[in-house]
Image (cartoon, rainbow, N blue to C red; front, side, top):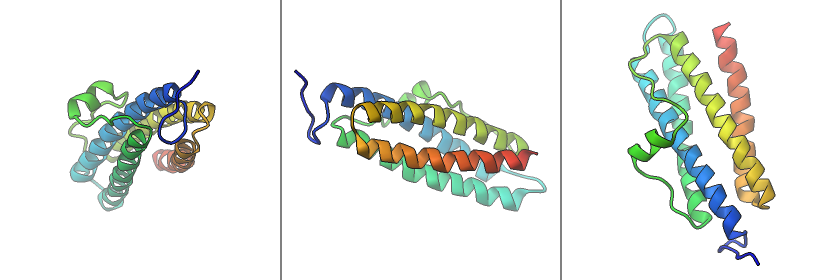
Length: 157
């Protein structure tokens, strides 16, 4: 016999989803701080172009961080909220003192790869749990980031 949470989803599946969403939250927090660092420290010929692009990245990440944390709460669990938890749990590593545009963009692409990997896991779990709210969120994130991967990859060519 399964028990349901407040939004009518299986509690056990919701717990597993919340755990993966917390992993995604950790990844987004590190992605966010990396993008902030790139924005602050970028130098060179493409400064103006990349300075704006990195601001777009961290602004978008900030919105997603809030959405993910609120989704964890909606499922009935607690979102991670310490930098120790974020850095220990994230598959994205901190990028320090990067001012070279190409290196920064390479880090952004690696970050997107990590985010997409976890988002696809969450998407699969949310489909199995019949959790349309999480499913829709992940589908939107994946679609946006696949396009961003294409665009940032084109920059490196």
